[in-house]
Length: 162
Length: 290
Image 1: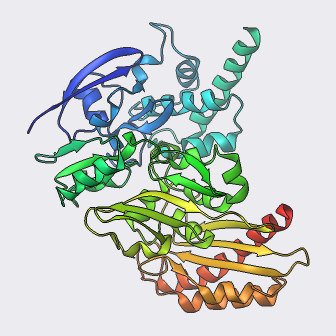
Image 2 (image 1 turned 90 degrees about the vertical axis):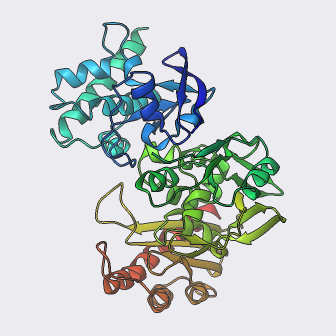
């Protein structure tokens, strides 16, 4: 089987990798680019643990073929923190204890950040519907929702101050 | 892993037709939210993938001759950004945005929902009720068919070898017309319809219904356009008696199966209930639109 050469942008950096035509973006991120923050939970688009942002919209990277991302822009959990400074969404997940095993957390962070990028002041109901595609089997969802609400409030304050 | 798979990303419809004509086992890829799952589960083993998304004009909503033209690769979430489309066909946009999660809807397309041919596809009853058509491209040129002509049974379509949907067209909305879609699921999100009902109708300034189409999903091998249910509304003021006739016509048309999501009896009863509720929403919208 011949491999495909894909040139893309990941977290603002130009990247090239070789992949099988049937490989998913998730496999390419994890195995070719060693970006193992995105997780495979279900492999069928139900759990959201593999959530990344593709050209500005969040998607399940298990439901994208790696070959499709030629020339496109990908953002993963590895690009969310600014060096060692956590993004407010990440910090609030820690402060609220919105994780236990942590397997679902990269997907939740990516989805929550995508929500706040689209909607700086979501209602609790909007948060819960937006995160319906992310499954957590440890915490229940209340702490996650509170973390997102708190992060939203902090980000709004930052915007007002700026 | 899929063995010896080809991957193509043609830039034109003609190029895609050529690729598909030379390889009958190839499959087209739009959003991939069904195709990739089926490939990975081993349910299908295509020889090649033809990604449609690099074809010019295949993504996005445009207006041609007053009709909405929705490119086959337009993700469901993008439909919400088109204010004119939302105003004219709110039921279609809502139905498409009940599918899966936000992550899934950022990729999934109505053309894919249609061609995956699940009897429970959410966008399909809404499209059928709206009188949508699909433009199909293939080795023998283009043809336009009513959306309901495409699903042939669970997982099978009437598309010939080498054919694929390039766009979905929605008619001009009539003054005093609107639509709605409701589905019944045991959860609040991320589930597959036990029953779905799509309704489009037109009411005159006198409050009398002048046109109506009612379609139901997940109650037969394919979506059902229930002509008798639409006929029960036309000429009425959409009163309780007319709503009861709609429910009766819908129940009579149902041919559901028993499965883990619901019994045939439950589905049939719920189809009537859901059709009535959907008519009421469409009516309210039609009144506020006129």
